[in-house]
Image (cartoon, rainbow, N blue to C red; front, top):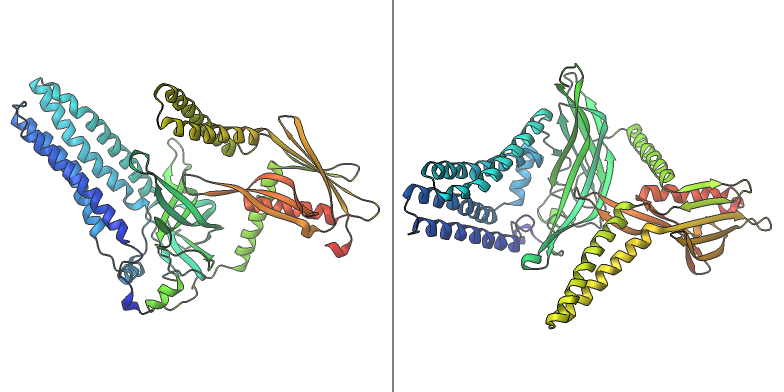
Length: 510
């Protein structure tokens, strides 16, 4: 494929996105114009100044927003020009301009609202009440924008310089940025590939974001003579992940880098000489290309010039392993009894964020289903189809959440003195009542397997995997431990079980 055959905006301005932006912008602009015209020519309102203010308000807010959306949708961005701009200026964090939009929208909403209130009160007209909600919303947005601005200015700009540029799947993704504030206990960098898409229609239309790939590392930090902190990082991208704007997915695919931690600033805690401690969080959107697109654009694939010292990498891996071990020790009780039997207890009531959501959502959908069922008995029709669906989905999720909240798994591994094999017994119970018991024999640690059973994603796009450990015995998978939060914690638990087995098995089984 030749470069000239590629649409110039293939990755950054998909056709559907442009059409959607124009449609939504047109709706807002038309609504603003119709509202302004209706108010301006309202025969029941005699005050011309009041009509002009109200018409100008709707025209400015809705019409202005519509024009902004249309211009943004029609904006042409050439990928090569965008990369050249990043090479010159770097990538500003998402937090750089967020407060500006809040402040502008706050002023746009509040000023006309305040004028309408003042004029209405002076003239004693009830129309003054129409300005109250706009003024309150506008002032709230303005105050929130100012708060964001102060927080951003205290820490300062964090312009990211990617290296190499552009990053390509299957190769390295690195970068650096400077920080005037001093990290307290280092910074965590998280790289995520996000898939954002919409489902449903009309009032039921919702936007979802799923994490296709995610990895974390600890930042390598150097301090210069002026006290400036220079943050560096380096990731290895898998070859089987999608690039930015991959069109085989419904919606959009994007890559995001997040840096988190605590920093000390130049500001002092009031009344003391102690430096103020602040939460630090910055996010950047990164352009990640596929090898085919990079080749088509004539971009040479190069390694990053960033060199992370081996000692820092070893310390990072050791720290992650230690955190995983401590995490799994808090989650799973594993002890060796005087008889030499290893006891592994996956207690009930853990993973509240998982089963709590199922209980809440299940109860809501289930109650809606019962209400629809009642309405169906009164009205009939299509409600007879909707009610059972809501009831089954809702109460099914509720019962599953109830099971997860009360489930307990007890595992006992003991050595058979005759052949040295590990004898396994597991007991499943729910709310203290035993459901079943299984037994088996482990002859090799290779029978053990770590599997992801569930996953959840937070509002900050942090993906949490819930792991379980199985033993493949006589063609069946017997679960030994469950509900382990985090893949690294699951790997640490797997290593602990293998260690318990290999202490008693022959050397050839290690």
